[in-house]
Length: 282
Image (cartoon, helix red, strand yellow):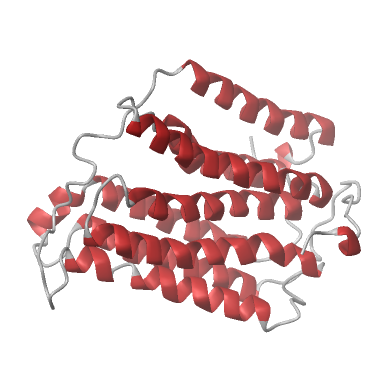
């Protein structure tokens, strides 16, 4: 089934598919047994102390997150947003996204100085905000600005709760990581479904797809941390993951900087129901 073909399905059907996919995935998650944090989760391959910094490259490789996040925030705050945004309030999820990216850099920097359960939430919490902000941004741009914005705060609270739930259950000796894993891994699936089912309002899809594949590559590097370090003893898979994911975040910014409203899209989509900007929370 081609992308173009799926986008001509009745709008109500496409929206129902997104809702059904989300509810089915969450319902299935509730039947999955608790997933504890791996016993070796904090055991990273590269433990070298360099320049007086323990786990030096895993620590310093977070700098791209900080640079991309601060750069993105500065660009969004110092420009009126047009023509990258049809409505100025469409910047809000991206502001939270880049704030989350910067805070992830600081949180991960601190965590890798002394990896352990007590420091891990400061790494995970801002990441949930970034993951879910990207979902809301794409929903606003492709499906319904009003509906997506109404879901934004509940989604952010769910992301924070997924980390809090793990931390509390971990303290009770029965750590359950599955809800955070859902927040981390379900958004890419949902984003792919949205892109498949709904036409864009902006150009630059190829840049966004490239950023997505960089995120996938980063996850693979994290998974093969030890194997990469065995082949490349000057850097580990986890440090490469930080660098690659940081570049992916910059690529999201590049997408925003270069995109324009897509006038080539000729669809019968009903107009988006946009909220009154004066009623939006600051």
